[in-house]
Length: 349
Ligand code: ACO
Image (cartoon, rainbow, N blue to C red; front, side, top):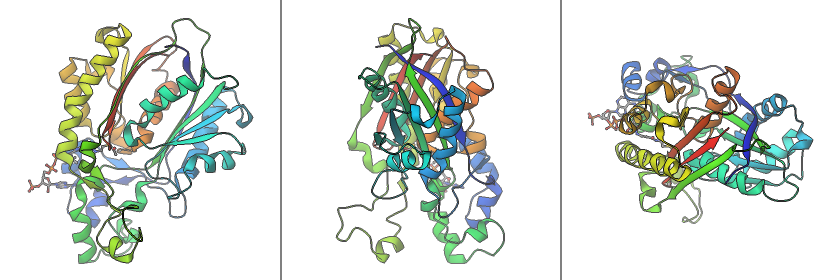
């Protein structure tokens, strides 16, 4: 495999950051617990009335600008999200319309936090198709809608939290403290530099573990939404944090080794291991199991929390803009998310 290269990137984080202390107003948690268990200090939330496609617009425009391209150059949109604007349609066509390139083919990818690895595979294949030169890959998430607290003014410290709300949010604190909202965008094209591109992929999905992280509501119900289902928190994620953690620290080292072996590169030859930002502790264990030095595993979870499908493009954008990520480097991307989906991609950028 060869060909794909990142020619532009952008990111967008909505509104002001919410600190761990802010969260401790609405549920039984603490700054110390969240920092120690996850490495997260703050996160952003999508404003009411906006969706993933709205967060994606500024990120996509920055990606186009940094590549010296315009909306008219986009031949295909791949939209990674587990929190689409609507149950249907997906957010991809909304983004095309909002960017001013209606009619551009747009595909939503539903592989949660592992979506970027799947998108690299899709983009690589699509770039071999006649007439497709530039692909916009976006990861954007608006998790705010499934946060367990009902009173956002209490989070802002403008109103006291009710005892009922506090108890309800505390029930869901395990997942609620880790997720944050944001968007990252990458513009990818076929490279003319020999040796550049996707060198290997190792991808997996296993629905046997789907109940470790899921939103229970769905079309198994008639009707699929009722006030009782909302009351019973069927629209709020159920996450078995310990099990997801256990899967991540065993499957991610395996997939990284498999992808590097397939690419014919040693772990020591890789310049960067760009990992999904779910929890700093997960990435530390994965790094230790691989025997990789900490400086090769960048992290930004402190500032944004887990933005699911958006973490990798946001991190890539930061690294391109501050000069860490440069043409010619060898990068291994790795991620695991609900599904379960997981995998790694080795790319010479
Ligand atoms: N604040 C304070 N205490 C808490 C919190 C909280 N936010 N959450 C849980 N606790 C308590 C628990 O009640 C428990 O108390 P107990 O011992 O008295 O029963 C204790 O802390 C330990 O709870 P665990 O759930 O075992 O905590 P753990 O160390 O596993 O950390 C965490 C939880 C951070 C969620 C961790 O399991 C994790 O990160 N897992 C991976 C999650 C993940 O990666 N999810 C995203 C996947 S990507 C995707 O597809 C979206």
